[in-house]
Structure formats: structure tokens, C-alpha cells
Image (cartoon, rainbow, N blue to C red; front, side):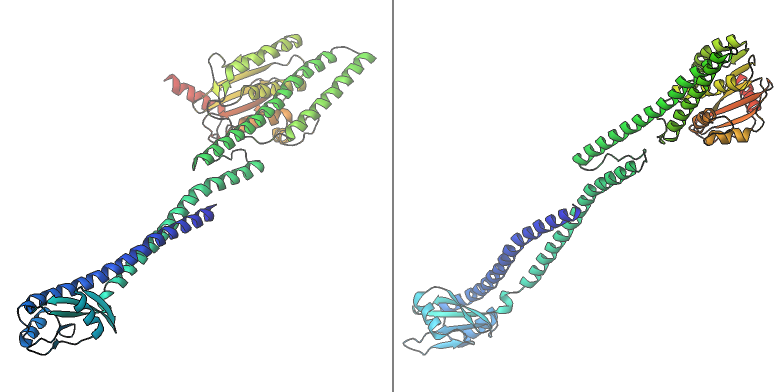
Length: 457
């Protein structure tokens, strides 16, 4: 399209230049000819007064010498009754041409070798007609024409080059947005969901860019919805299964109880397989946009409201702290709920009945820390547990819970750590970064206390 536009502009400009330059060049040539013969007429007119007064040869030679070069002017006086014909200067015109001008009494031009001559009739006092011949060489007729034509050619070439340059720039303005649209389409097809097209260029391409960006936003939104659906799947299926497994454990002995527990275990394995498959197929979506997030305190209160009922059935003591005030975090509500359910489900699954647990929320200046701790036996190898969260699962665990938590923290620039809690068991610390920067590697308890003391001051 770029070269097509350049060719069209080149053809149009060349036609315009030719249409104006050729007639203008001919006009310049004609003007130079008119100028040369006008000068010749003025020279001839300078001799006419003297011819009307006298026909003396000596006086006429002086007049011719003062009016013009003798080699360019000649005077032809016909013979009279009392004298012979007088010819002053070099004659170039033919005798027939001179006789015709004398007979007709009108000025005339005729071609001669090397140029042209102007034959101007002048009436003498005796009534005869003299002819003044002025020679106009070809160099004078074409004087300045070559220079003028060269200037016209230069201007025409400059116009053509300028038009091509302008057409090329216009073509770039048209082609570049189209190329960016093609590149962004390829990037989107390769899975780069952040590919967008600048909305610039001609109106049609701007509209195409707007449509492409809208389509890309829709794709990202659909994939984000799918991601939320996968997280919601773990929330809706794993949580009731944990309750069902715990209730099945309290059925006692007997064939029916064993069959129920076996069925629950098989159902849990199938659900884990489905969730793991959904997790592996989950695409990498773009980060949440500005304004996305939730109130961590509200989500913690809501999920603890659910788990507290089960905790009372099993005689577990529980505690929640730091949820008195809103705590905004750049995490989707469904993601945080899924992470909390995964960690609390692990507490109920991997600790004995009656084991206490707690959830603490610490709100700092640049980060929010969520602590899920229990009074169980703890995790002997935290690194292996985090490795299961990144892999396909082992040691009787799918690794889904820690994987959900890790993804949530890393999406904000934070991280997850496993350590020992003040209750004596395991503590999972979720560091949610508020500004997207890498978290500072320091003890969270001391840093939170220092920030609290600084805020109190």
C-alpha cells in the first residue's frame, strides 16, 4: 500500500509538472523572441527620423553607428531622380523581400543564415520608401531560454521528489498502524494477552485498532473468568468434601461406614484430578487492572464464618485478628477466598480433631500479611511442601492448596513462607505486596510491629 501510494503520487505529480512546464517553456521561448524583435524595432525606429530629413550617406552612417552596430543594421534607400540607390551596412535579406516590404509598406521578418532580419519601411521626404534592415542573431532570440528551461526542470524535479517524499511519509502513517495491527494479532495468537494496538493513524485503522483492543480485552476477561471458575471449583468442591470426609470419619465401624469412607476418598481423588487438570490447562492471563481487588478483612470474616461451624463440631478453638478495619489488597475476592479455603482445609485434613487454629491479618504500609497457623504437629520439610505446590503433588497431597496460595501472592509481587507458629504447629505466611515491588526479605513479625509503632507515633 505504501509503494502504491508513492506510485500514484509520482504519476500525478509528473503529469501536473509536464502539463504546466511544457506550455510555460514555450511561452518563455516566445517571450524571448518577442524581446529580441522589440529591441530590433527600437533600433530601426531610432534611424527613422534621420531618414525623413536626409539621405546623405555620411550622415546616415553616423546615425546607424549611433543606433546600433553596423554589422547588425543596414539601410536601403531606393534610387531617386537625382541620385543613385544608397545601401548602408551589410545586407542579409533577399532583394525580393526588401522590394516586397517597400511595396506593401509594412514591417516584416524573414529568416537568414544564422538568425532573422527585421525589415522596417520608412517614408523619405521625397516620397520614396526606404527599408531599415536589423539583423537579429539566433543567439539573441534564444537568450535566457536555456536557463529558464533549466530552472523549470529543476523546479519540476523538486516537486516530483517532494511529492514522493510526502507520499512516502503518508504511506508510512498508513502502513505502520496496519503492521502494528498484524503484529499484535500474531502476538495475541501466540498467547501474549497483553498485546494491544495504539489507536492512531487514519480513521479506518483507528477504528480497527479500537475493535482489536476491545476483542483482546474480551479474550482476557473470558480467560480471567475461566481462571476464577477454576479457583471457585476448588472452593466449592474441596470445602464440602472436607466436611463430608470428616463426617464420614465419625460414622464408626461397619461395612456401610467403610464403603462411605471409601466412596468419599474416591470422590476426593476424582475431584483432585479434575482440579489438577483445570490448573494445568489454566492460561497465563494479564494482571488485574487498576481498581481490581477486595477487602481482605471482609473475606477472612466470611470464610471463618463458614469454617467456624465445622470447628465447633470438632471442638477446635479458633481465633481471628486484624479484621476490624477494611484491608484493601490487589487480589480478586474469589482468589483470596480460594486460598483461605485451601489452607483451612489443610488444617482440618492434616491435623487431629480438636487442634486449634488462627487467622491473623497484618496491614502494613507496603504489604498485607495473612497468617494461617495451627497447633498441630507442624511440617517437617517446608521446602518439600512448597515443591509439591509447584509440581503435580506427592506424599498423599495434590499440592493444589499451596499452589493456589503461591500464585495469589506472586501475582502481587509477594511470596509464601512456611514456618513454625506461636501455637506450636505450622504457620503459613502470605505476603501480599501492595505496590507490586519485590518483598523485603526480613522477619515479618518484627517488621509489622515496627510499622505499627511508627504509625502509632
